[in-house]
Amino acid sequence: MPRPVRFRLGLSRRARLGAATVAALVAGTAAFGIGQATAEHSVPRTDKEIPNLTQVQDKIKAYYGDTVTADGEHYASPRSNYARQVRGIESKARTYLTKALAKHSGTDATTRPAIVLDMDDTTLLTYNYELQVGFHFTPESQDKYLESTDMDPVFGMNRLVNWAHDKGAEVFFITGRKEAQRDWSVRNLKNIGYDVALDRTHVYLKDKEHPPAYLPCGATCTTIEYKSGTRKHIESLGYHIVANFGDQYSDLSGGAADRAFKMPNPMYYLP
Image 1: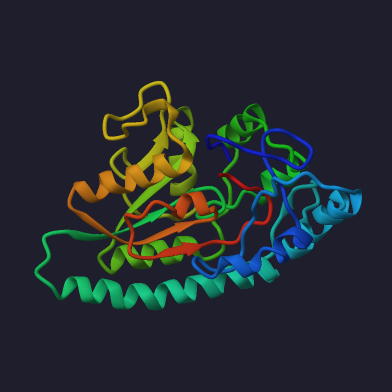
Image 2: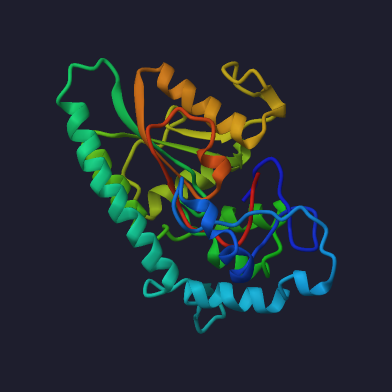
């Protein structure tokens, strides 16, 4: 979804990668966990080095357990391998947070524990949108979709977030979505059960027209600069970020969090 730079298989906006590419990259995911898309910048020498686009899309659909309704809408299945992988990550996160939040509450620390989450494919599942536009993202199609449609929660993430909040964690969202999409984004989070504060001090969207003073890079921030700089700003307000969740490595790089949890996303890569 809209963050500063996107690449695409055969297009200039967004790289969409399937199982063949993803499988070759799993070995590099130990720091954050399995499940990623990444960009291959070398120039292929022959067609044999390029995954077949149709086959990649078919594998993505199979991984998400593609389910089609009577009116032609596509949804991911809660019994899919994707959902199974997400549940495994959430289980590890819950185990970690149980200890981290208990430890924090048992100290005289002046900072409050917090968790930070990305939106698209971390807390909100974009799969229906992706299938509706044929894996062909455009800002215009995204605006039209978000204005009228609520994305489903990433399986179980709303329950995990609400649980962590009940255990004492303050919840913050940092997304590359543009500021103009704030009302739609907040409405979506509320409607699908994220029962946490969703005001401007808890939900951060990218505002290129009026970038905040705490980001020295201003309107030219990379994703890593924007997200890590915003996390540092949150910590400057008296919070200690014990966990950071994202589906892109650029969501997780740059520090200002005790632990990062990488959510799976084989559909696109955002540097």
